[in-house]
Structure formats: C-alpha cells, structure tokens
Image 1 (tube, rainbow, N blue to C red):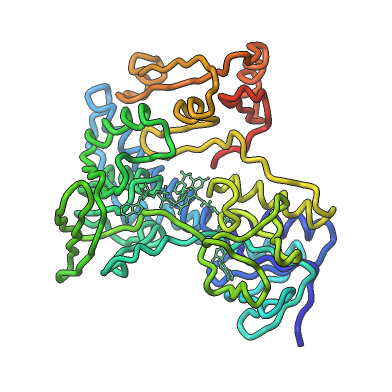
Image 2 (spheres, rainbow, N blue to C red):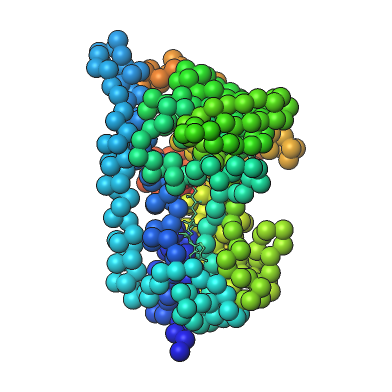
Length: 431
Ligand SMILES: Cc1cc2nc3c(=O)[nH]c(=O)nc-3n(C[C@H](O)[C@H](O)[C@H](O)COP(=O)(O)OP(=O)(O)OC[C@H]3O[C@@H](n4cnc5c(N)ncnc54)[C@H](O)[C@@H]3O)c2cc1C
Ligand SMILES: NC(=O)c1ccc[n+]([C@@H]2O[C@H](COP(=O)([O-])OP(=O)(O)OC[C@H]3O[C@@H](n4cnc5c(N)ncnc54)[C@H](O)[C@@H]3O)[C@@H](O)[C@H]2O)c1
C-alpha cells in the first residue's frame, strides 16, 4: 500500500524546509524525507557549526590583536571545549526540526528517496506518491578522481574532529579552504592550502583578496597556487600528498587532509531516469519556474537546482519560488541579481553586485573608489591591520537612489545596489 500526498519534499535543509512549511501552511498534505539527521548542510555541516567555531577563534584572535594594548592574557583554544560549544548548538537541530515539521502536520520519513515512477518515490521499502515531488537534495563534495581520495575528510569531518591535528592540508582554495584555514590556524595548527587555480577566492575581487592574503601570511597559513593534487597516500598515522601542475612536482606531509575543492549535486541514488527527470551534463533540466522540463510533476530548489549561487539564502529564495508555483501555478521565477556573499575569514571578505572585472566585461561605465583603511576608526578600534573597500557606481545611477539605499541599509530590511545601477531592491541576505 502506498501513501499519497500533495507534495513530497526530498531533503530537510533550507530549501526543503521553506517549501514544506509554506505548502503545508496552505493546507496541502506534505511528506519530507532525509537519509541524514534532519536540518541540512547549513545548520549541521556548514554555515552554523563553522560560525560556532569562529565564535571561539575570533575571540582568541581579538585578544591576541589587543596584546600590548591593555590585554595581556595568553589566550589559547581548547579544541575539545570549542567542539562541545558548537555541538551545544548543532546537536538539538535534528530533533527540533522534525518536531517543528510534525507540529505543522508534515509527515516525516527517514531514508534515501529514489524515484520508482514519475509521481512516486521509494523510501526504505515504502512507496510514497504525490502530485508533485520537490528535489531539495543539496550538494556533496565533488569526486576528485585521484588515487587516495578516500583519505580526505570533508566539511562534515572537519567540523566534527575530536582533536586538532598539528599539520592540516586543505585541497582547494575557495570558501571552505579560506574559512577552515583561518579557524585551524587561529586554533594552533600548521595549515597549508593547495589550490589548483592561480589565486584564492576567485569569486571575489583580486585586489581585495590580495589584501586579505597578508592576513594568511600573518597567521602562518601557507598557500601553494597552480598546484594540482595528484595522489594522497597514508603512511602510518600521517599522509603524503603529491602534487603537480604549473607549481611543479612537490610532496607534502600532513596529519589531516581536507576536501575543500568544490561541491555539486550527486543524483546517482535518486534514479532520475525512473522518474523521467532529465539531466544534462550533471544539471537538472529546469524551466524558469524551477520545474523539470521532462517531468512537470517535479521541481527543484537550492544547491540541487544549480540555478543561483550555492548559498543558504539562495536555497531559501528558491524554496519560496517553488512553493508559490506549487500553490498558485507557475508564475514565480527566481531573481539572483545582487546576491551578497561573505567569506567568513578573520577579517571577513564580502561582496554584492558586480565586481570590477565583471563590470568591465559588460562594458559598463562606472566610477570606482577603492582604498585600504587601516587608519579608519572602525579598523583601529578592532586593533585590526587589514581592511579596505572597493565601490563601483554605474554612471547615470541616480545619486538620490543611492542615498535612499544607504538610508535603508541602516534599517532592519537589507537593501542593496549593484554596479549596474539597478537601483534599490530587496536583497537576499547572506547568512
Ligand atoms: C562548510 C560549509 C560552509 C558554508 N557556509 C555558508 C555560509 O556561511 N553562508 C551561506 O550562505 N552558505 C554557506 N554554505 C552553503 C550552504 O550550506 C548551502 O548552500 C545550503 O545549505 C544548501 O541548502 P539546500 O537546502 O539546497 O541543501 P542541503 O541543506 O544540503 O539539504 C539537502 C538535504 O537533502 C538530503 N538528501 C540528499 N539526497 C537525498 C535523497 N535521495 N533522499 C533523502 N534525502 C536526501 C541530504 O542529506 C541533505 O540533508 C556552506 C556550505 C558548506 C559546506
Ligand atoms: N561563506 C559562505 O558563503 C560559504 C562557505 C563555505 C562554502 N560555501 C559554499 O559551498 C561551496 C563549496 O565550497 P568549496 O570551498 O568546496 O568550493 P569553491 O567552489 O568555493 O572552491 C573550490 C576551489 O577548489 C579548487 N580546486 C578544485 N579542484 C581542485 C583540485 N583537485 N586541487 C586543488 N584545488 C582544486 C578550485 O579551483 C576552487 O578554487 C561553495 O561554492 C560555496 O557556495 C559558502
């Protein structure tokens, strides 16, 4: 006997929660399933646990910056206690999340869903049917296709490690490497980043990244760019990493090797073919309403949809779009303009709108102001050495609107302005 719902949502992260709650609140019957504890990446294995660890490491860092300026204690991180501090926040998440689904009348299942027909999935031997099925299945660390990749731990492993290894190698040079290296170095580890690109944080303006790199030097993080990891071998309790690429052939020794080389959806277990859901080059084929073009019963939201940047507020935004389309028919489309993003290094690096290279590529005429600001009050008050900004304003943008934007920014509702001069608009807020 199969169970029937209006909507089945696969996943229990940000995108899934937004869809399930909104659709259920409108009186539709909803089922949710996840094979992991409920809560998704951001709450359990991403943004939030990372920020709990940053809570401790930034406190220690601040105290160190204030040394000789009225603060004299030698502050050290106790990794075990910091981990418990993090768990104090993350451990209750799955229970709370499931309870909140149940209280909203949403049926909850535990297990990996796989399609057994266009409107049906199987979860742990049970068949669930629905008018609509929403894929909110997130992303997983990309397969590197190198010998010894099984020795790498991923973001989940890093955020759950019981003790801090002495030497840590991070493979990749994006958000995760940027943030985890700052946490681990502040906590006392020797950190090396192996990045196959020519610089770190390629989604951010190169000038600002270069300024931030001074901080990496200061805290002792070593960066090797143009470096391709070719092999990871276990040698007793440690690891040997062999690299190639333009940076030449090198070997590194480490006590821990961390995957920070990108994430993408893994559709293998879903058996999309059985659901008639088309995939092209690893991407779901979706229309502008986030609906599968081959099976109109299926929608997708968040990291799994790969339509906007893979960030939590985007998953939430997609979730709202899909819920609106499920409830009122296709009419809502996502808007990914001006999505803000922050790399939570210490200090953090943030961006919104177009960067200089993107604005030039588009042939826009703009005014630009950029400076390092070590003398600013806010920088000195934090005893920080690295700070600065770059602002682009498109010619023809109305100054009045910019003033309005700045005024609104001081209010709780965030408003942003992009370099295209698209004016004030409600922005997706970063986590
Ligand atoms: C270390 C790290 C730090 C991050 N920090 C930030 C940050 O500071 N700010 C920010 O905006 N973004 C951050 N992100 C990105 C952010 O976490 C993701 O973009 C967001 O969580 C994606 O949400 P989602 O709902 O699309 O998917 P997820 O939250 O990943 O949820 C997908 C769920 O689906 C489940 N699932 C998958 N397949 C199946 C199946 N077949 N059956 C049942 N269940 C299934 C998974 O177990 C998972 O729980 C970070 C990511 C990482 C890894
Ligand atoms: N603060 C935030 O918002 C935040 C924090 C963490 C993660 N995230 C999200 O999670 C996603 C995944 O993060 P990530 O840091 O793993 O990915 P990423 O895409 O940010 O960076 C991956 C980096 O690894 C490099 N790389 C890829 N393969 C490599 C290899 N074999 N050897 C060496 N380098 C290699 C790439 O050049 C790239 O610079 C991000 O796209 C981001 O959207 C966001």
